[in-house]
Length: 73
Ligand code: HEM
Image (cartoon, rainbow, N blue to C red; front, side):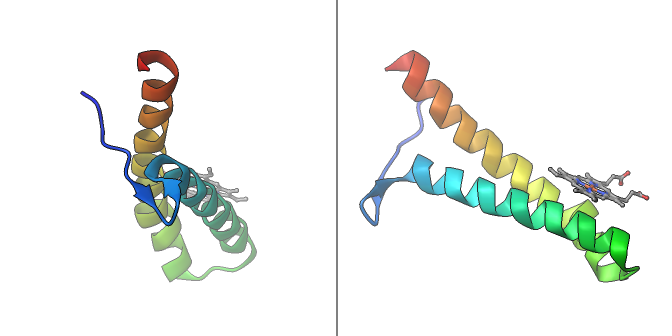
């Protein structure tokens, strides 16, 4: 299966997905550190239920593009 890689704002989609992955990783790590420092319940929910799931899905899609470009082109 080959995914389409449209150009968005002059960069291919996989580049934007990579930037998004990096941002989500920084957010997730910062949330983890903030959780250890304070005991806010909503931070806990965002770190353990929302961001990591979105991060993994976006990272896997981004990695699939990388695999496709490196091995299948
Ligand atoms: C790539 C970075 C990270 C990912 C993907 C990640 C993912 C997760 C996930 C999935 C959970 C839920 C685990 C469970 O429900 O048992 C969790 C819990 C937690 N994370 Fe992270 N985490 C990351 C970084 C960090 C960092 C940098 C810190 C703190 C310095 C941190 C602190 C914690 C804490 C305190 C919990 C709660 C553990 C508990 O259930 O008591 N995380 N993390």
